[in-house]
Image (cartoon, rainbow, N blue to C red):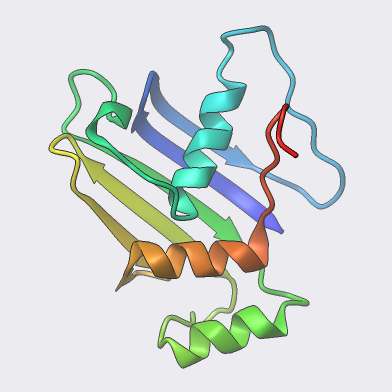
Length: 134
């Protein structure tokens, strides 16, 4: 379960901190309100391609963090342990920093990680389906 999503200087977002509670969550808003930007930020922290154009104009870097529960996901817990990325408190904190140069860095539970590792972890956690995806 996604517990929180933090976005800093991403596309047009200056700062956004969301906390999610157990149960059904719905994001609604008018066209242009930023719903797709939030989903895009989540995709980037889960290993999707990042580029310099994602950094908000006038900023040096964008940063996205997402905290997930690993409860009920023994395969993910094993993956994190095997990769030396497990947290002492349990759970999974993903973070991605994108520099204005286009270079990015990834972290899992505060430890440096590869984008490929973010993708592999994301496979355990989230399925993102677009409006016209099959």
